[in-house]
Length: 280
Image: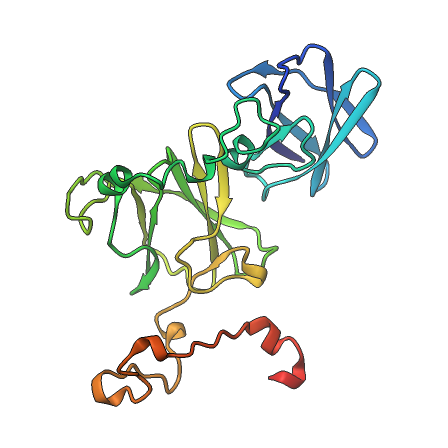
């Protein structure tokens, strides 16, 4: 038996929710939904039961003689699926900031995407210059994530690097408590964890909780991913080494130019270059 945790935020500019009816539907089963009002609009919190695994759920809004249906894709089970939906906007948002930036939001903030990074004082207070991402040493994995606006962070580790691999374990990360003007030591915005296990060959994502929403994301500092970049892969030190590759400095770096502005940089897309077997 599966129980999918759901949280749906629905917004109408006129603020009239009692003139609507809301239902969820799946496999020809229809259930009426109740809500409470919060800062965004109508909030629906529930668990959707199912005898088999699901990929999506239909959320339907009835207003007078009209109906609007939204197909919500589920997060990786058993993690929470949380979405933001606005009347008049056909897009389903899986994080709060872009929803607030939507022109269909009554108190639209077009700069919501940048609200945490456009301030010099923010950088001064929260900046960090230490190592981030995943590092594997001596059968121990160290994780570090810069997420100063988060209230809770978990590492979701999967059994392998395949996109359909099930969850292996979930770990709670701890927030740093060192505040310093030296950003190498300023860890108050950094979440970290040491796992005393060999995680090589597995994959992971961060489940990040914010005041009004949560999101599941790969590591922004990852150096390897599962297919299509969906999950971060965990590599051993040996797997990161490139055969016959060596960093050159000074006169040995014969390709360097006296004037870097004259350099020509070519970009290669690995998928385009290797998709056909004749291109390998």
